[in-house]
Length: 51
Image 1 (tube, rainbow, N blue to C red):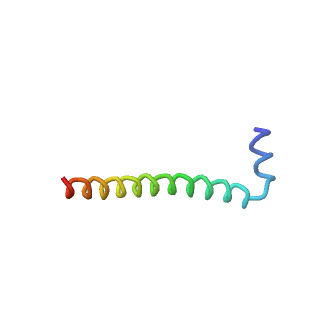
Image 2: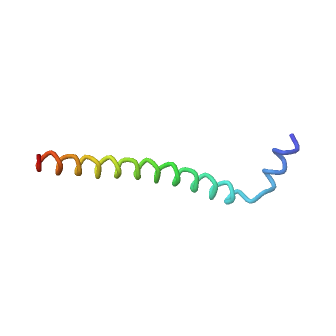
Image 3: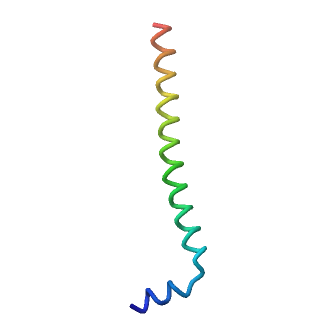
């Protein structure tokens, strides 16, 4: 119960920052993976066109 009281005392924007950073990191990771897949697909297509 003490921990909850302590976190209630903390400014709320701190938790907003943490949440936004975490969600941004997750979103960025997903985007990065998608980009990597797209690049890989392009390279594979280029290679198959040469062959």
